[in-house]
Amino acid sequence: MRKTTRSREIFSKAQSYFPGGVNSPVRAFKSVGGEPFIVRSGEGPYLIDVDGNRYVDFINSWGPLVLGHAHPVVVEALQRQLAMGTTFGACHELEVQLAEIVQRLFPSMEMMRFVNSGTEAGMAVIRLARGFTKRSKIVKFEGCYHGHADVLLAKAGSGVLTLGLPDCAGVPEAAVSDTLVAEFNSLDSVERLFSECGSEIAAIIVEPVVGNCCLLVPQPGFLQGLREISANHGALLILDEVMTGFRVALEGAQGLYGVTPDLTMLGKVIGGGLPVGAFGGRTDIMKLLAPLGPVYQAGTLSGNPLAMAAGIATLGEWMKPGNFEKASGVAAQLVFGMREAASRYQIPLQVEAVGTMFGFFFAHSPVLSFRDTLKVNKEAFVEFFKAMLDEGVYFAPSAFEAGFVCLPHSGEAIDYTLSKLPIGFTAARRAMT
Ligand code: KE4
Image (cartoon, rainbow, N blue to C red; front, top):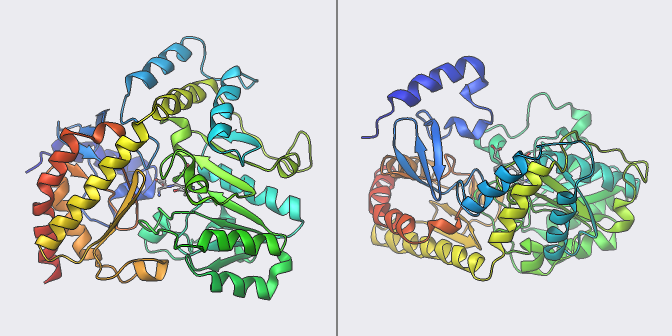
């Protein structure tokens, strides 16, 4: 049994400072029960908590850490930059260097701007799309999460879904009256919205592979269909690649599925573990941004050299020939191992990986839409999660979050994980009888 004395002490103190004891809701373990452990450090694919327990970490801080924790290349780049200063609120060469790398992998981002989170990127692309088209309606999808800007917090996935709050309190009706919600993988649901108010729709925004209600993979033709529908109605297509960027493929979902958006959101990986978001796209749209145009957007720490240094070091290592393939191979190994163990224990399991992102549902049939996710066996997930955690394997503490594989998962960490699956599935089975 895991020792949790020190974690409990610290978590009880944390609860007197932070609502739920956390600085982001999903960390509170609310949907899996029990209390979160308190992290002391990260090493490669592992987290070590304050009681000395070690966990194989399949969250990678919700996606950013493609190289794992405290990779020497990233640490060294940060140490070098630290000695020269962390932020200047002025132009710096490292911003240009990171932009060059991003544009090489995402050529649709003819121009871009760095911000400090995915949420900021989401706010900016919506304002920009509305400014460019002079329209106000936005189409999003049930189960997709694009950060917590009011306009996008209508039936969001991720934290809101996990906490069972289909609509978020505190968001005035006026803030979401122009936010239309369609069904992922249903072009009909999108066509219906456009037939009703196509001329008022500024943009479609979508997670091209949905990682915020676990993992929903786009069915053939879906993303291409969104591209056609938006173009036919003079609306923009925004791909939220905050999670999928550099993870489903180095070139993101737009490279993997061959769909060119008008605007893209990025985050997570480009900061290499420091707070960075980005948005970008067609020059004619981006030139509407201040100081060139009338659409305002700004940020004190945007493009700060410390975060840029971490992003450059991370992507430089990640893009080395064979690294992405090696990590994707580990994700495939995990999927195969889970499928094999689940069938051995007669557990109905749907498990998929797209590049280095993966997701699994305790369900009898494929899960292709938000509505399908409502039929999954959450109790089985909770028992699986808890049993694996006690064995030192840390999956997302929610049935509605994707998992992530990093480069150092290969070898010992994935072998250890696969060896513990029988324990996890035996626990899940108990919840299913
Ligand atoms: P941030 O504001 O958290 O940097 O990014 C928001 C965001 C935007 N778009 C997508 C596709 C995202 O997945 C996210 C944030 N993802 C969640 C995990 N599902 C972050 C974890 C958390 O909220 O604590």
